[in-house]
Length: 183
Picture 1 (tube, rainbow, N blue to C red):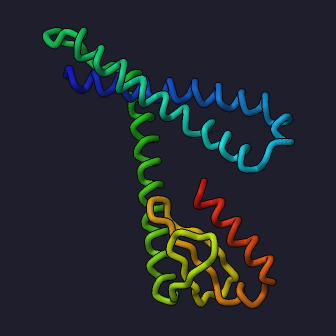
Picture 2: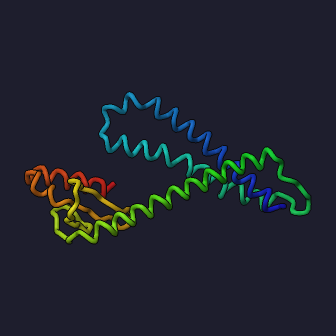
Picture 3: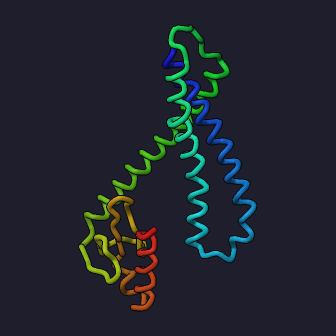
């Protein structure tokens, strides 16, 4: 029961801290949204990314660095405390949210892996100036230029893009994708 109670408290705390930090992030964005119109799109995107990631990281860090050590240090193991239905309900919602996030991440990872494998079947390696990741020319019905992958990014460019764009436009599109890679 000691570990079940600790797990329930940890899950409920993650949900509470994430919810409060998300509310603070949302309020902060509402406060700076108007003034951010003059900022570059890269700066705005970076700020939005941080405002979405920090609440989750804050909740997890507080639980792992503060709550868990304090619980194991100060909670008596001999006493018998039951998990109340309210705590179980909040912990259950937190567990469901974490499970859904992990499932969504796994599904997206699998879809991207399948897409990359499919594109690689119809692609030939190419060299592009300003790109230091593997680049491929592929046959595709859509004029796609896309970076796929986070840890090992690859650039894919559809055949028709090379004939549809001027050299200057192609250079600009490639530099745009290089910006994604750098980010």
